[in-house]
Structure formats: C-alpha cells, structure tokens
Image 1 (cartoon, one colour):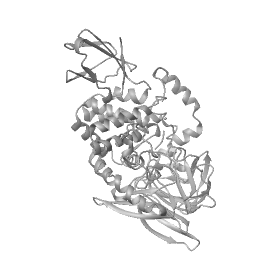
Image 2 (cartoon, rainbow, N blue to C red):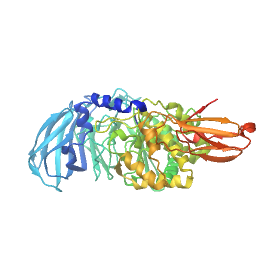
Image 3 (spheres, rainbow, N blue to C red):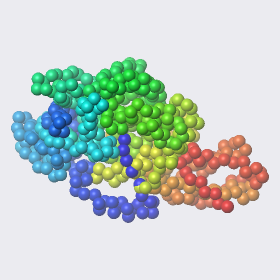
Image 4 (cartoon, rainbow, N blue to C red):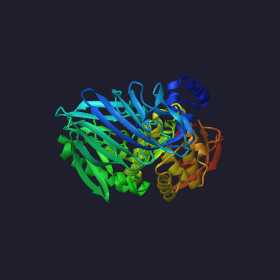
Amino acid sequence: MKKSLYISLLIIGFQQLSAQNFTHRDSLQGGLRLERTCFDVQRYDLSLTINPDEKSITGYNQVTFKVIEPTQKIQLDLFDNMKVDSIVWNNQKLNYTRDYDAVFINFPQPIDQNSIEKLRFYYSGKPKVAKNAPWDGGFVFSKDDNKKDFIAVAVQGTGASLWYPCKDSQTDEPDNGATIKVAVPNGLMNVSNGRFTGSQDLGNGYTRWDWEVKNPINNYDITVNIADYVHIHDTYEGLDLDYYVLRENEEKAKQHFEADVKPMFACFNKKFGNYPFWEDGYKLVETPYLGMEHQSAVAYGNKYRKGYLGRDLSRSGLGMGFDFIIIHETGHEWFGNSITSKDIADMWIHEAFTTYSETVFIECQKGYEAAMKYINGQGFNVQNDRPVIGQYGVNNEGSGDMYYKGALLLNTLRHVINDDAKWWKLLHDYSEHFKKQIIDTDQVVAYFNEKSGMNLTPIFNQYLKTTQIPELVYKTDGNYFYYRWDNVNADFNMPVDIEYNRKKVRLYPTTQEQKIKLRKLKKSKSYQIFDNNFFIKLKEEL
C-alpha cells in the first residue's frame, strides 16, 4: 500500500542524476553484496516484549539460514537507532560491525556450504514512530475510546529492520515461515500473522501471545497489533475468517465485514486461484492507521465505511459500493504477498495488479460496463511525474502511478489481447504459476508474451519506463480516416479499435501516418474510437 515518474527524452540524464543522489546507506539497504547472497533465510522466530509506556522493544530474533556459499561474514539489518545487545551462534557471542542499518556479523571460522545454521540476535530500543502511517514506516502508539493502548506497525518501503533484525531484502523470505511471540501488558492482546497457538501469563504484568506462520512471508508483512481486541470467527468454504476489532466496534464489524469479505473471496478465488495462505487462515485486524497488506493479518483502519475513508477514488460513484481497504489490501494476498517483487523498484508488480483487483471485484459484482467505468475513472489520479519502475539496488520505489497507471496498463493489455477467455485464463494462471515466488518485471513480461502469443514488451516498456501516454492522432478527409501514434517509443506496437457503422475495426497504428477507407464516412461521421479500452489520449487534427 504505498508510492510515486520522468520524461522519456530525459530518462537517461535523470537516472544518472538520481543515481548521484543515492547514498551508501541506500545501497546497503537495497543492494545485493556477497554478505547477503551467501545465505538463504529458512525461518524467523521472534520473541519480544513491547512496553507501551516506554514505546520500547526488547527481545530477539532467532534466524535459521542455509549457507549458499562458504562464508565467514553475513549481513543482517537493524536500524541504527536500535541497540544490538548480543548475537549468539553455537553458544558463542559473535563479533559484528555496524554500517548505518547494516550489521555485518563475523563467524570465528568459515561456515560450510549447505549447512543449516541458527543464530539469536538479541536487541532492544525504541523503534521509529510513524508520522503518517502507512505512508511513512514506523510504529503507531495510540489509545482507543476507552483510553486503552492501541498499537500497530507498518514498514513497507522503509524496511522491517526498523523494528526487528532480519535480512531486510525482498529477495529472500523465510521459506519455512515464522513464529511471532509478543509479550504485552495484561489486559491487552497482540495479534500477528498466521495461526494463534496460545498465550501465557508471564507473572510479571505481561501476557505473551504466540502466533505461527506456515508459509513464506515478506519481511514487511510480519506485524504486531496490540489492543483490547475482541475476536469474531467465521468461515468461507472451509477458510477460517477471523476478525480482531476494538471492543466497542464488535457489532458494527460483524455486519460490515459480512457485506464484502465473502463476495470478495468468491470473486478472487475464481479469478486468481484459491487464497494462497489457506494454512495460515485470513484475518482482518483493526488498526489505528488506514491499512496494510500484512499477510494473513490484513490491517484494517477504514472505520467501517464504504469507499476510501468515505470517498470514491475513481470518481465514478462505484467506489462507494464496497470497503476499499478490505478489497484492495486483501487483493495483495495474491499480488505482493504471494507474488513478491525482488526489488521495490518493481513494486508495480504488487500495486498494479492489486489496484486492478478492485476493477475485477466490480466486474464480478456489477458486470463489464461498470468495471470499465470504474477503472477509467481512476485515470484522473495518474500524475505522470516519473516512471513506474524505480532505481534498482538502492531501495527506491517508482512513481505512485504504479497503482492507477499500472491498473490501466492491465486493462489495456486485456483489450489488446481481445479475447476475454484468454485474458482471464492468463491472469488466473499468472497468479498460480508465480504463487509464493519472488520475481521481477522481466519475468512478468516474458510470461504475458508467452501466454498471449503476442509481443507485449513495447507496451509494457511504454507504460512502465516512460511518462508518455500514447496519443492517437487522427483526422478524416473525405471517406478516409487517417491515424498515427504520437508521444511513443519508436517500437511501440499497440493496436486500437474503432467502430464504424456498428462494426468494430482493429487498427495497427505506427508513428507513420496510415489511412483506412470507410464508406460514406464524409456523410455519416459514424465512428467511435474505443479509448476507454486503452489508456491513451486522443488528438483530432482539423
């Protein structure tokens, strides 16, 4: 849930300028040096105490990892405002050095390839507090209406190492899941990802709440949510639906969630394949910020309203027919949580498909015409400020246009393919083929090319790597309709459809002017350009 573009003729120069602005710290967080690539995380086991009064954390993360290349040094990450208390391996305290948020851990001797190792990283401190979660990373320490603590965290983009030590790179997830055990003051509950496995009164004024995740999970998806929660349980076709809401909102939540959650799963399971984290269940957890796609524990803060905080971001009126946060953030369970980008520069892989899932939900509920009205309404939100794809290797996201422009790109591809049966199969098979995998833009494009049987690469490049929206320049002269592409890369190869005398005609414009003869055009002017099916601009030359 986050985000941010260039001008085509200035791309190279701008990228060079941007590269000069990136820092050593950015490279440490976003780069892939040997100290990161030499090991593969297998599991995280977190055990923490969170003190709301002090706004502090104390505890450890036990990191289980497989050695990919023999090494004597690895990099884990923890924000430099947090204290490293000790790092223990085989009952030995390890030496380490810190370079901003990177912690380089030295072993007393090389560790062997293919060995499975465990270390405990003990730490403490006061994690960063967010000023405006979830758009900036950090904790939110607040109170509910009964003056009880209401606490949550969101760190997408900023980095999970803001609050716990980890290999803070989207290239690696704990393959065998995680446990999250969090002690909080008595009278409060902590809700984290996966299944609840029990609680224990520690006898010191704190109760520990234990959760286990069976599936691989992004670093930024691991979460804590602390409040005086009540638990509501439901099911959908064998899938556990669990809602954790503030005590005063129990009845309101029951009615509100019922309206959207089950219809959403009926739609998404059909269109994208079954919910990918069935073993871990599905939760909506009330939070003091708007929302976030925390895997199997979706953060919900839309205050039981339709739309996006009571507004329709599409300006179509259709956005007020559902709770935006439920639909959008749950869409991320397929796109972002199951299918994850290797680098946040490719975060469009998360956000474009998830934003498109809103349109898919509209189509499931209200049909094709309503879906087209909704997605084209989102076009008003496109800024074209810089490219959708960011800079690789420096923890840099692209433009916020990854949401709406990305979704409009997918709608465009649907109509380029021009075969709905093929389109829905492609989208479903894409979700299943890359299920629980970490991928990049090249893999997405290659898959769409293969399954569509078309060369879609120039279209992806146009919308993802430039700020130029294709412009169809056209005019009529007698019975001839003249047309060409402007504002595009030289190899841009996208067709466009027009209707003439109730018959659809597919044109294949290039940057060179072409013409087509349409009988009686001069008299009837009876043609329509299907610009709502393609994210383009129209320019009529007189």
